[in-house]
Image (cartoon, rainbow, N blue to C red):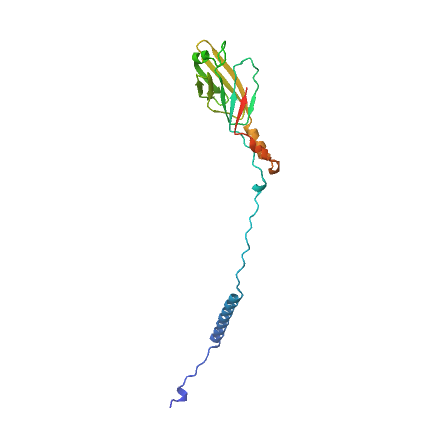
Length: 203
């Protein structure tokens, strides 16, 4: 039989017991909160998505500013040349081959033509001139215009004489752009969409 004096009694440290009790309480609290949140968890119902109206649905399309224009000239050099206005950025010249003391577009004018030169003095652009000998007419490629006044010099050199003509074209593209940007959606009319992309100016 063991001696009672040799039996060591277990002694608990109060500090360790306190720490252990606090940790146990924290653990129990965490477990309780975990199960409590799971019990209260519910899926949120998704609300149906509705299409939001856009501002474009109430706006009318903006007016179309023409990019190209055609200017038809004649052979009457005595005619008082009035300044032509266009919002296009480029213009093409068309018309008959003009020769003094002959009918416009006659065969003699086409056969005597030596040189043709058309240039925009505002930007020093020299246009390419296309001659239709059978119809005794000419046309050019599209001549770029600068904002404001453009003075276009037309010169036909023949074997016997020379025909010259000065055309003043005012490009209002910048003004048209400013006016278009100042329009409100309510002021834009559907009829503004009917502006043709290519306009023709007749002299």
